[in-house]
Length: 158
Image 1 (cartoon, one colour):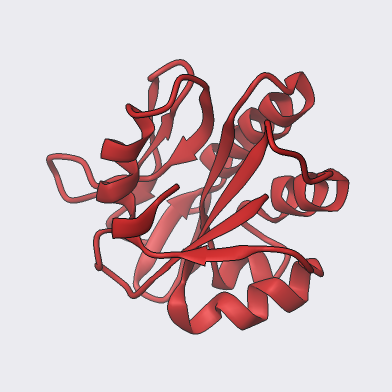
Image 2 (cartoon, rainbow, N blue to C red):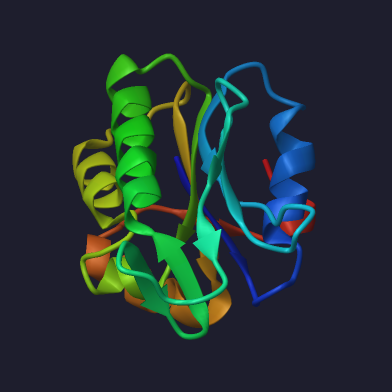
């Protein structure tokens, strides 16, 4: 099943995910929580590794969306982690946090999202959990051609 965790900006989607991950045996993928400096970092759920991700200002190696600036190399790493985890296949849930404006432009996590969603075959043992802002849900569904899904809120994670 493809689950779409929908919520508004700063509504606690990633915080809820951090707590939820611990309730399942085999969750892989990435989440992007805020660090102690209020900048987002990339967190590999499987290895528990943290990677620098957000910058305060635009730099040569960043991609920007609105007022946020993210390291391009970290997006490359995130895409690699997601595709590798999907191909290994040993997961109950694979988390993609988050799909948004960049992905609709073919940037950010688009490479992994496009590959994973395009090759995913629904079954009872492996689920995808896509994190999407509420106002972009319809656009993401259309962009990736998602036909069968269930929308969930932070408080109703599976």
